[in-house]
Image 1 (cartoon, one colour):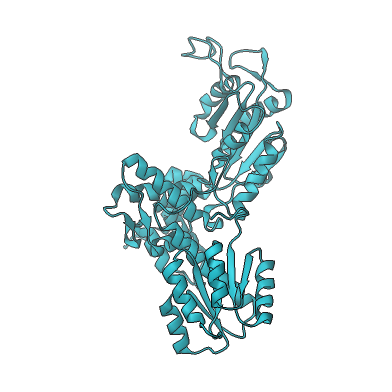
Image 2: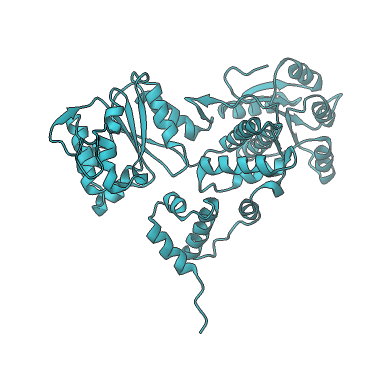
Length: 451
């Protein structure tokens, strides 16, 4: 049975009407859909008619105890979680409840904060358990081809909805690997320009001497080797959208030329003096703080304000919670199908590592990790030892607060470099610094030579 509104459903079982009302009100205020039962018989009737995510049951009840209900749920509703609450707390009672299958044991009296924390922990365990079962997890929620249901990514979806209704310039910010190009494509293909071209340009990947020609085209004889006239990316995108990734990598001279295009909606081909009108929506992206660059004088303020009409910030993966599990399952299924193999299942422990890892390379890093697992693993069950050693190490180690800022920075740089497979250009991009700065920081970490 599907849940139309997507809310998690909780069944509260207690023979005390006041307790039922209090729990129902507190949980309902947090957005859960709450069902109540005054005994085990009523609870079983609810379980038979509704899809319940979490059962919260009192221990001591007339006729049939809460332990019997826990046992019944574990034997018949393995896709539901169970919490035990009781005013008769004891060590033996807690042990028995856990042995029966209860994820949490909460003694009365408890505060609202303690209740909600326990509920959150229990439902998180349930989501991890569901995500680890290959073949039983429903298709992950997608919006514009982007996967996720966290509040952080939902804000991006809402921003895409609004941006797609206009032709205003959009600036997409966020760390490397978060999916900024996917957001740009979503805006284009859900706008009135969807039937026209979408052209993606990596400004940081084109040599400065060629960038102007690539963007605006050139006429025959404009420079050595220009034996024919050739249209640039802006002409190719006419009527549609152009995505300028890593826009902060442009030189100040190129920024002036781009500013002219935004102001006058026309380009001038290299070697020509005649302007040509173009109808192109510009969507720019950067992993750097452009306002800081403006203050430093390394990015033009007038171009910044031209680009910064609509701003969409894509959140880092570490801030997207359970989206990590959804994406891991999605990538596992995708790569397994490509390899003609069964979709691997993730153990609870391995999913817990994925969930709490820092993901400096964001979604792109997760995709690469899952692809490696699918290719290299000999089992259909992914255990912790199948994960990259860096992730296993991070899971076992929670650095204390006794480290200097330099030590924290050095550790993070090493982790990012490892996640980028040792590629210094890629690591520098993730860190938001240039290769020279990265080399200097790595050199500073090297131990001094012994005399």
